[in-house]
Amino acid sequence: MKNILLHGLLQTPSSWKVIQSQLQEKQIDSQCPNLFQMTQEKTYQNLFNEFTNFCNNQKGKLNLCGLSFGGILALEYAKKFPEKVNSLIIINVPYTIPKILFQIQNIIFHFMPKKVFQKVGMTKKEFRKFLKSMSQIEIKKNIEKISCPCFILNGSSDYSNKKSAKHFQEQIAKSKVQIISNSSHEVNVDNPFELSKIIIDVWK
Image (tube, rainbow, N blue to C red; front, side):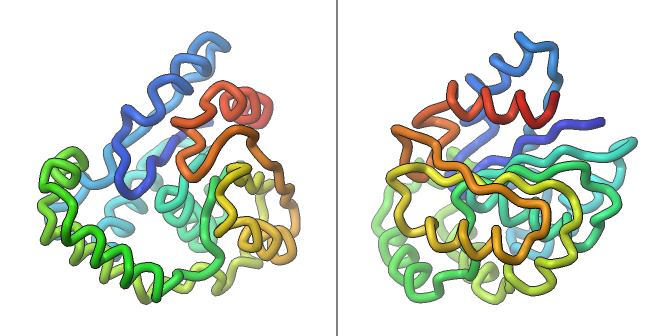
């Protein structure tokens, strides 16, 4: 069984560093690929295709755990290859792409310093193009095809995704919602120790 951690949109694999350390103490190996280094052409579809190749090349079934954007990738892969996924942990994932919010974020990103985007391996122009390419994703489409156990986690202060968590629970047969205390959107950074305990319980 391979255990894979997937970072958020403005994160890097280092965002999972504390959690990977906790997992290692319990003798649980994990991988955290740098998602934005998987493809030269920075669009969602290209990245998803490369992520699919990455997962399909892993031997055996997968345990996938993704935050936000990483959770979207995990869900999309599990819908397409349900037989390949042993378990899902999704954290603060939207049920639908909030297009108006994306437009507002795009404006905000326009004024953010270049170094923010360089950290994740993209230019500001590439990042905004990538964000635009995500606008057509239909996350809820075929969500009922997910057949593995799915743990839906929500940061206690991430109010925008609490309704999404309930929608996912209604549509995914083997699912459970859990709130992570003292955390907002970036749960893996805000409260890595509580999150680690949940991941360990699932992956053990």
